[in-house]
Length: 71
Image 1 (tube, rainbow, N blue to C red):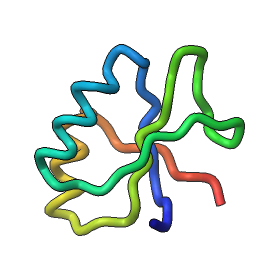
Image 2: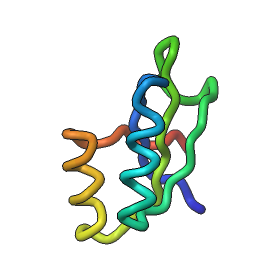
Image 3: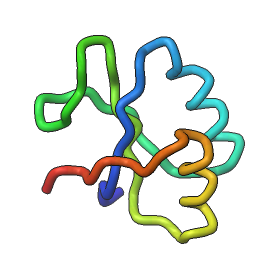
Image 4: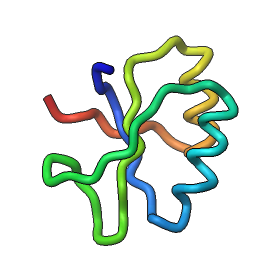
């Protein structure tokens, strides 16, 4: 999967978001690394480029645009 954008998320929200994204068949991986801008207690939901139709669901779920994944 080529990584395009990500959302930092507190650990407490991982389960809910993972279930919601899986139910919508939206591809993602969960990462935690130094190259991403994460605060203590956060992980990143990472997404590939996707059609606008799918991106709309991601945008609505997270409530904002994601951050660009570093190259």
